[in-house]
Image (cartoon, rainbow over all chains, first blue to last red; front, side, top):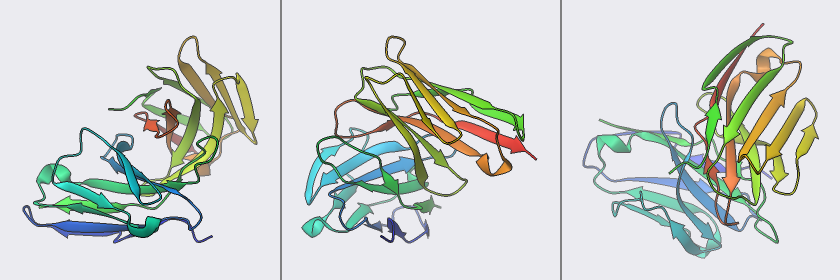
Length: 115
Length: 110
């Protein structure tokens, strides 16, 4: 068990560019979540997958954001035409969902800065 | 939108003292969890309490849940400098996702 891995740890980009983040969950976990966190705030839910199916997306998630989880393993989060307001820490978490939803295991996050 | 709110927003105590932080939430829940986050890192799960439980202990942690008041408290006893972090409550209402509160920033002074 190597934990949840996120890459890159930091990303600096210019406004209007596209960025992609990767998350590798704990291997036996069937659920994968993406959260966004700004300074001084709690994590804000973006979307989650059960296996390869994207089951829910936050209404806050604009059309510029897209996430995939091919084959139910790793996941990518892409932001197109980045804006300065997209600057935040993007956190990935995974869990094993069975009869009850249990705890989340978080990665260290990707810190995005849009200049 | 975030479901919960922690109180206080910031707390500073001396090492050895107890720290209490509170969480209020808006809708009925299946369970409530507390997480810890060190600066610039991901969150780490501390403890989970189900809606039919009133109190739970884990080491130096004690969590209470009052579903009638839609509130929970986290008590850290005999605090240590290493407990310095932000603490978040997270609620699970649907069994599908977790909503996090705004967090309490705890500073333990050696």
